[in-house]
Length: 153
Image 1 (cartoon, helix red, strand yellow):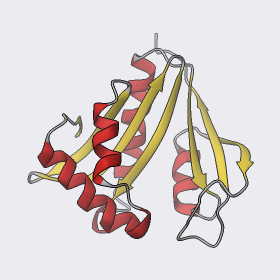
Image 2 (cartoon, helix red, strand yellow; image 1 turned 90 degrees about the vertical axis):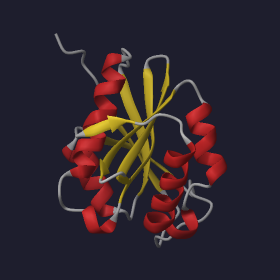
Image 3 (cartoon, one colour; image 1 turned 180 degrees about the horizontal axis):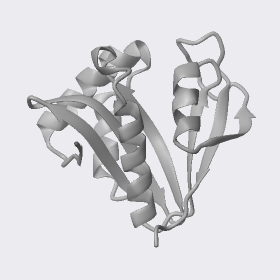
Image 4 (cartoon, one colour; image 1 turned 60 degrees about the vertical axis):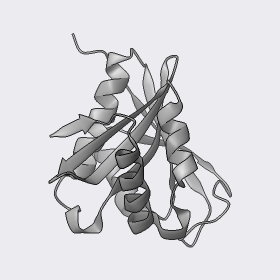
């Protein structure tokens, strides 16, 4: 089950550790994570197993738009549907907040993530050249992807 995370230092430290394992030098810092927790428009959702966060996503809501900021799944927990569950939880939160669409950027060379987002209803809307200042991929370009949301009746 995916759960909404509260702002605790234990959660912050676990997310920092997860970020380092998944993204290496591109990981969010403790300041980035604390800043998102302090932002009243941001929401964190995670899969917790035996007290440890093994996957998470961060969503920022601004009026009718939801911005998916980050998603990470530990390598040992990939290919189990957790990425899909996290994205679905973020989209459900966006619907509950009456967002009309969700948006994200993803490196054009990050094929597994692009496929995950397409599976969850996102479509490529454009490319942002040199979007990333640094990247572990062979390009710094990003797709802008959008998922149009309909409120469930």
